[in-house]
Amino acid sequence: MTEPNALNVEVNVTEPEVAVVTVSGDLDGETGTSLHHQLANQIVHGRRYLVLDLRAVPFMDSSGLNIIIRASNETKRLDGSLHLAAVSDVVLRLLDLTGISVTTPVHASPEDALAEIASRQAAEPDPAEGFHSAQR
Image 1 (cartoon, rainbow, N blue to C red):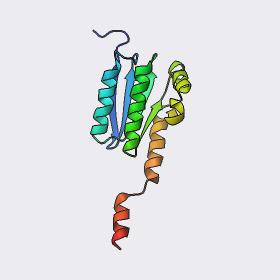
Image 2 (cartoon, helix red, strand yellow):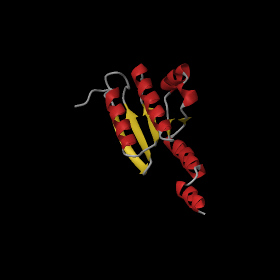
Image 3 (cartoon, helix red, strand yellow):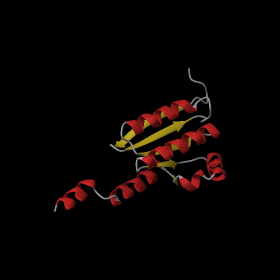
Image 4 (tube, rainbow, N blue to C red):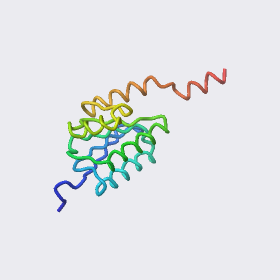
């Protein structure tokens, strides 16, 4: 039997480089390790665009903020991005107070986040095209 606010993390890979990570429960020092491991695992497996669906996270402390900052930095290092979606008012206030909502995109829904990722991917130059034009 799980505890009432135990953290649950589910991953849905939507494309080879994109994953939606749905989180439910309190995100704090006790529970955050499992989320950190899931995000790190996605990055290791080539997902450089991550969407965190936080609609079912009623509470987050500095440990949760740290996980978001680390994942954001890691995806940026890989020329990707971390997107937060469906954030509760309580968590959004924390993100606003700490400035994370300024540096990490916050969307109304995971679908909105995926649409922005798709438009960014479409705008990226194709590395294969650059190689062929250099050969000419």
